[in-house]
Length: 204
Image (cartoon, rainbow, N blue to C red; front, side, top):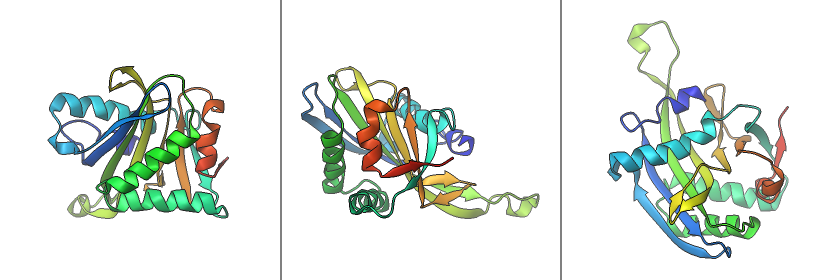
């Protein structure tokens, strides 16, 4: 995970887009956004990168765990297909984004307003070699999404994430289609409906 997070700075980031929605205290949709990440101001880049990297930079096997995706569930297959479609279009399809927001809103109850933030990135995984002539070559391109569910500290100002995920999982420096990394800042109970939505089983 350090391999991913060390690039999450305003000067080194390769994030392509950021999208998200706001939900009011009654659980109703309260607006959305979808922008090119590189067009953000330096201040906004830094602020949003802090949110994004909270997920992969958290304590592995404590706050961030790897879960096996349940491929037998049709509902789960539908959500995974949706996430793949969102990843493949680089967040550029607003209809797909709205569908994801609706699913999260239907499966999460909060008494406080919150935001759902989605980040898209493509990472050229460098070859690990002692051969200096090949050190800049890519082994593969790891394309992924980070989702962060954040309470709103102020109007439309997301605070630190409480729940989120990295999809697909990043295992042994490679894309892992069979797993997803899920983040819980504190207790998992409040977010069980979202976990079930992803159809996951904890990987020991």
